[in-house]
Amino acid sequence: MRNGIRFESWYEDFNRFAGDLYEGRYTSDYVKDLVELGKEVRTLADEKGSLIVAHNYQYPELQEVAQAVGDSLGLSQYVAQQADKRVDFCGVWFMGETAKTIVGDRAKVYMPDKPGCSLVASIDRERIKGWLARNPEAVVISYVNTDARTKAISDYICTSRNAAQVLQHAADTHPGRRILFLPDKYLGSVALAQSTVDRDRVDLYDGACHVHAKIGEHALEESFDRHPDAELLLHPECGCSTSCLAKTTNGSSPYRNAYFLSTEQMLRRARSSAAPEFVVGTEAGMLYRLRKLVPEKTFHPISHDAMCEYMKMNTLEKLRDSLKHDRVEVTVEPHVREEAQAAIQRMLTIQ
Image 1 (cartoon, rainbow, N blue to C red):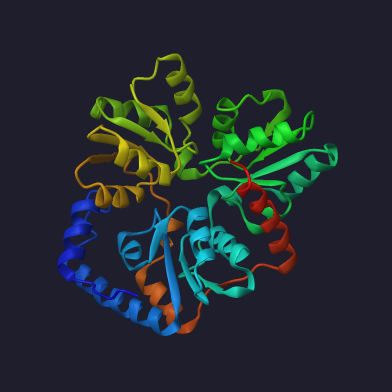
Image 2: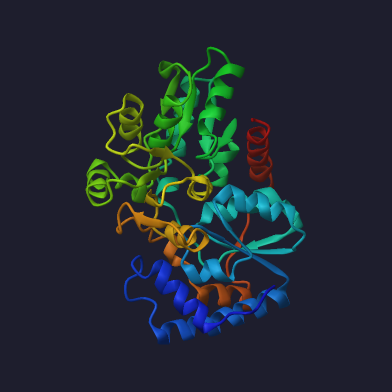
């Protein structure tokens, strides 16, 4: 693993690209400490033969020590393509479970901490079982941002990139059957609007990410007042996504150019667009990566309050300790892993 961590570059990058996101965090003394931790982490990763990956919402220092940065499914797919016997996944718990489900017994998966997720916490498995008992022939579609046990009782998994395609495929493949889309109601609503599936066939589970749910119409209006000429890059989990999509469709959105995108699609759009300025509607940690990889353009958070405290539970110090002591290993029961893997593979065949 590359080990060329320099104080000057970390101090400049963290303050240039994330200083407004984490105000007062990246002082000279603190960055010096982070640099020493970062060097130690990379040395330990080399010794342990570990592949470190970090989600887009992680602190900049975790993104910097990682060999890959991305969204939850993309990182798990990346891990699956590598030969490493150990993975240290910087994200929330269900992401580590997804990685473990995909790599199976080939590699051990560890995390710096054991962060939960408000979206996963909204899932009531007994409620789902009751729904299935009333609809025994139904089809279950689960967002990839769910725990392994929920994936295991699902027919299909989807991502924020392909939710509409998966929903359309499931409806076309199983004509007449009811469909349960879970757990994110906002993503489900956008997927329905982007497909031709009969709304009456689909039950949307009443779940949401607490960070994205708070990004509502008020935040959207305020961001437009501040940046009226910017393109809007909006994650479909956002609380304002459904109404914003409707307004965009009928031409009443204040933003002339609004795009509903996964985090990885946001990066691609930012690179390909002629626009010089963007408002980004997702967890604010994403802006560090956008700003660093597309430095010639300007990115504004739709809200500085869009921070996930669970994502921020991971730190370099905890990653160092996990590498030293094998502290937090992710395990998934074999039968759960097998059933969840089948649903994931079914998704990957859908174009």
